[in-house]
Image (tube, helix red, strand yellow):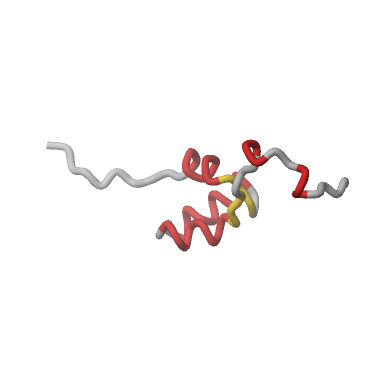
Length: 63
């Protein structure tokens, strides 16, 4: 593993990485879905990865 000095990074390529459990608590995601996301993505993931992998229930009733 290599140490990278953050002062020398290009700020346009920096991604915010979330702890999956923290993201789920803040977003109000059910605990079963949180466990599934941790299995799929691991403990840490970018916001984009989380948003693309969340399965939301369809609450609208079709008529």
